[in-house]
Length: 134
Image 1 (cartoon, rainbow, N blue to C red):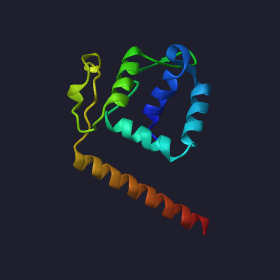
Image 2 (cartoon, rainbow, N blue to C red):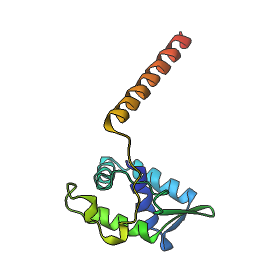
Image 3 (cartoon, helix red, strand yellow):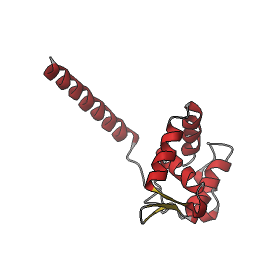
């Protein structure tokens, strides 16, 4: 399940787009346990804007005790759900969301290296846990 897409979908379902943290957590827990369909759907939608960051891009605002989806967030969510092809470039997005700044990702080789390092650290941690448990 894609966390950021789910947050946008949850917030857009509330009046005024605002929900307190307890409501967000409850709704996300329901969606997370609702089955593979929701997970697959959020992955498909998230693939349309792979570098989505709801807070740094100004799609969701933190307000007293909760979060609120912005107009930019609503527009981007509509765009993400309305596209028919993942292959379409992001530049084809409506001009309203053109100002959504997407942080650049490190090169693929660097990301792969980080992934390998994380896997190695997890493996070492499991081995340490096994050795102390014996």
